[in-house]
Image 1: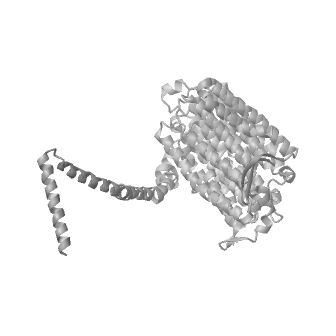
Image 2: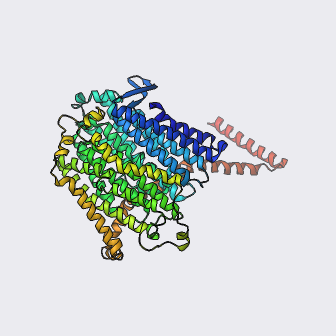
Length: 638
């Protein structure tokens, strides 16, 4: 069961990837979906056995590295943290695989798509069940590779190729810091095995590196690595461009796999972070800033998938806020609930795009809610959960993040709480802006498109229903275990809080207005969206004209792409041109080519002497003899 949850997706990947042409599109889809469904059953069973029955276990596979003082085993670490991730990843991925059978049914290379999708899932599962940092790094790089393949899946499009490269390069920057963190961890602890690291944290608290506490440096380096995968402020630029991939890819990346890897890494390393208060403060500030930053951009975007993408970026900021104040369990809880309602929103958006003949601009939609009522209802459920409305999943997890930030009673915690409340208002606003512009008002699409608007087939709506159920129930059902008064028994030591860290207890004792405030600001955000886009639909255009500079600033994503282009891309391009024109053409190629040209000219000159006339050859021999005799006589005379 434990092994099947991880390796069944790899089996599906190999079947579709190696034998797809032989068995055909339909069997490739069925094989990968069947493997993924079995993996989901195993994953859920593992979650129940480990999380609720406390049957934590490490399953050894083989010895991977044994060189000098470095010994690394390949094992599957199944504690509560890993089991939560495995259950969530396998279930969400199974629904996305099933949905893809309908969404990708007319694609030209179906086996390749499903092989990549299953590979992505396998790599994420390898990451979350890793027993050491090197094995985790294997999964870490594996999801980076799979994301590159899936974002650029439609490689005939130049924009898809550019987006895939952008994601790959930005993630490599983060991965560089991650590798430094792993190296410093080995230098500090003498091992990369989690058990060895965690047991030696107290002794390592006194170790310094370049005059700084080694654990603080490790915490910052690992967080920078997490920023790349989880698209935190500064590393976020690849995330919206990743929408170039097929919609199921967007759902998998943004809900259950790639972007959650950084949050998982921080939670896994909680024993180390508890001794790194400065690193935690940095995490809280960056996370809170990301939550607000991404929410402001989401308010003006017009691509249906990009709005949801920036929503993901913002929600990841909430997760890092919780990490930064020491509420690791709350971060994983929000990650868990977010996977369901974010996958639901992306797949619902895919259903809209499918109905609208591949149109993604919400300015060209409207008036379609009666034609696709089920998708409309699922969109509402996902948006209510995202906005943190009462009794939906986000209400329990996102509000818990804000309560933990308030309970931290620290500067970073206060900053995180204020930014989180503002972001909650903006989240509700852009969510209902998206609903109103997509489904309500007069139709703004071409009448030929409107004639063909229809509900998606059952193979696409059934996964929506399952994820919709998760978006409604996961918060209320799992809150008592994840963050309730029984959280210590549930997590069973897989996440560590030091004796000085009381935030998990203090968050249940905050003033009564703190849990109510996010709901109030959320309702205000919904009300503002209703007024601006339903009551006075001309108001947004007037405001955009009046505050044009602000509008363009947000529409252009705070000009981060332009800034990076000026700081990194153009100088790098100019340097590359100089190295090419001078270093390559003139020096590397110039010197050998020049020598070759001289040789060619000399050979051509010598060839002119080869006339084929005996008189010329005799004259040349006489001249040579005269020169030789002259030189000989001069030598004798001296």
